[in-house]
Image (tube, helix red, strand yellow):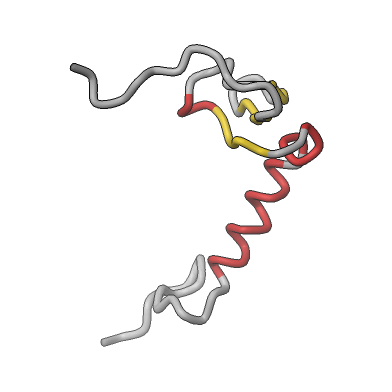
Length: 77
């Protein structure tokens, strides 16, 4: 018995951004490792890379993390 059910087709209204092809698709057409989503709208999926870039920047600059900023050595402990 499989632990996860494989879903062959996406639901209408679920939008994904395919990293491999650089395209927006309704329902997952490409494999999960190659896509971002689901998004509620086609427009949100079209801006997936911009959204990811903004989130990465926020996380990198989050003061709650103790990591050194990119390109800097961590402080001596």
